[in-house]
Length: 292
Length: 306
Image (cartoon, rainbow over all chains, first blue to last red; front, top):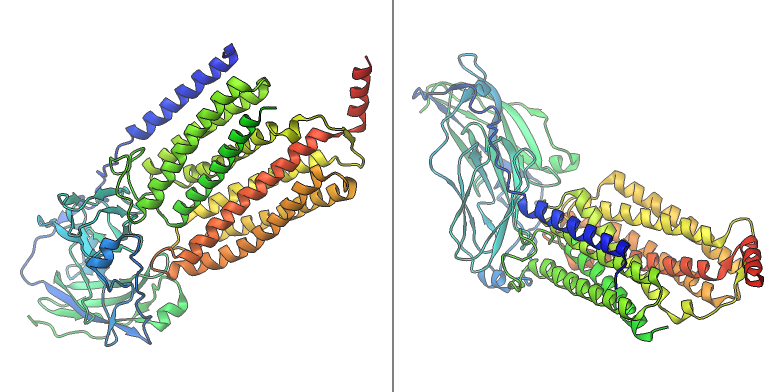
């Protein structure tokens, strides 16, 4: 039935197919072992006179109205969360929630750079839950190599798919009732988008840092970063929107056992520029030294 | 001519067109990674088809059906088709559909790298081109004897058709790359977008020249004028759909998820692009079937006389 030439082609086709299949099935999830330089510095030991950075995030102008999400593709989501809406700009009384605030750079009071230190990684895993077909929390922080514990509280299936630039990408299904998934990110990255490809409206953002000095603004726009050594720092506030979000920075001095304040404002001005805002803003307040 | 073979080839070509639409729906819904495993979906042959898994697993089911139909066509060709080169083309189609399935698996396993995703979308068009060609070669219009027409003019219509075909294929590659370069929640890549617009201009110019030449030289030959007119009409629709797809994609990053207007328009743009390609293939093959250069006609007459 087949000529010799045809048989050769058939054999080549089958061999190539098997090779491609083997390469596809043999690819294992990459495991990041690079610590991104986090473990190379001297270890910071708390002295008991650390301070904090506090502040609030404002939103100028009229915020965009949340958009109702069409959950008809998965009726369970509609039953579980009938009022599901977008969470990219949650503003209450002019204050913005879900802004990620962190120390970007800076110098401690003794003149050493914060980047020269390593900080103890919390043993407790940070929690990320899928509840009502959205991620809770929407924005969160982690230290490098700290575990994030992902749970599914929904009676439907999700898949968790972070799309980092500096860490390995992974995509894992979590059926309803499945045990929690624990993962770590080895390299610092602000911020890693997380999505669910089954429910494309589901988004979360994880800020991964080498130090523990970060916070997320609450519904009233306030945040607190505790345990900060005295020094002068560049504090950054990031909010989602556009391809990479918008970031603003300002210089803040944290006195010994005191508190530095960094208030940020987003909204019309930031939106109008349409680019990641790296402009320096003056510190709005330098708090008193010695305040506990 | 075997009517059954032609009907089966038409069925495979139609199913492939439907498969291209199913694939485009996956891309537009950003559903390519709705399940991280392949070939099963979440370890199941028939998973619960909710959320974006409906589009991704549905695409896999349609693809499996097309694969099985292609196997059936190849068997049918080897049983009923006398022309060896047509049987070989059938084997090539089988090879292409297997490679296409494996590429689809790689896109999932490697988490949609642009090169693999674009190659998957491009090979889809090549496979469609092959199934359309098989349908043409097994048709009565191809097999029955036809008067050979001598080409007049400096540039042969056949070669113009080949240039148009190559231009459309390059444009399809550009379009596939543009679609897979960003997801719905990000703006389209500007460089790729400009390249795709330039490609559209080139296709319009080249295909326009082909159609104009066909109508000027072979106005009476409906065997050529029909696909030419159809290709031009589809190109017009395709350009309108392209503009609409651009507007819809520009607006989509503000949407909480891929919404139906954007999905519908972008999928229609992909499907219409495939139809422009298929119609141009038909025109090209028909041009090669009945048109000859003066010298070739002379040689043919001599060989027949000898």
